[in-house]
Length: 166
Image (tube, rainbow, N blue to C red; front, side, top):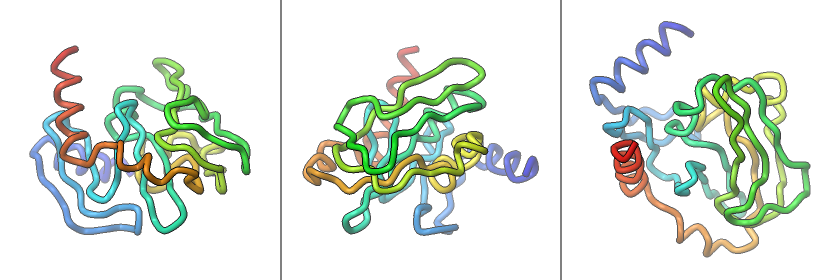
């Protein structure tokens, strides 16, 4: 695990990219200058959540950029199954060694699945934010909301601009 994390951070520092996909949630990715991975095929909110829309299901989590700023995640609070989430409204929180942060939903809909692995292993949000660290799956109530989110290039630029401002 440590070797994989070292290799990943080295690849990031060297701005290497991969088109190899480990799973259906991991399409080819590009590396931004802020050294966070941003995946193709996902949509991004300016509050640093990502959405993968497949058919009638949207998978939601926090971005690599967000988890990097949070530090080690030690607790995740997630919504109940069958509850509703609303665009730009709080649906949960993550607690890290640095702070507690609310998680905002990038779209509205009904929660059809919750990643229960995060109860026992909240660190999956750090080690695998786009794969094993996803948070909820939602049946979108207004799929047009997806069109208001950023694509990978826009999100990468957003992160670079945000980091430059701090």
